Image 1: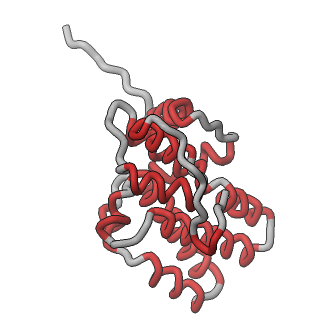
Image 2: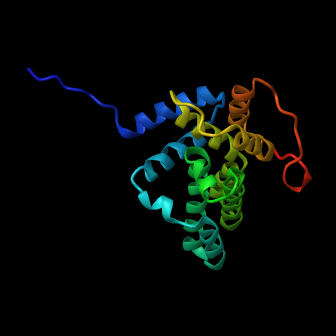
Image 3: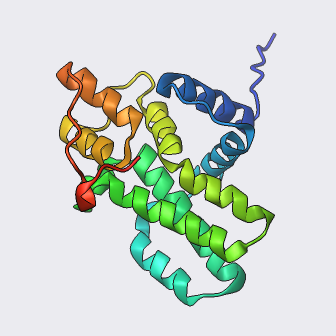
Length: 192
């Protein structure tokens, strides 16, 4: 007699993982944001070319495009920046930039997309731009489930200072057992 293993579908598995990460990050997403994140993860699961793009160049190219090509390019830049900042923050170190670089670029791409759309879909991308740090925190928490933090204390401090990331603050508190002081970040002020 054979044993049968009944697996949930891929979407259910990602939903479960996102929910666990939300709990770990102490963040809660509404249904639209959770769905977007789940389908983003599904879409990029089998895309090794994610690592091969230069996001700033892709962003600049999208400014020269129009219509659906520009929209698709901006969405791709925003999505990749979200994945880099959340799941692959070490890429920032390798590229000699701060993780907040991906946050700023991704937020900008989603905001540009919202402005170009000017319809009901624009609201989704405005919300993605506004919720970018929360989504990044959830992705970082997902990566850290059962693993040590991915950010070293210095990177965690920079990310917290520049974006207000609660996940980075948790990492920093675990490493130092203290609450850091808010020293101004870029342009002389903290951004949240």
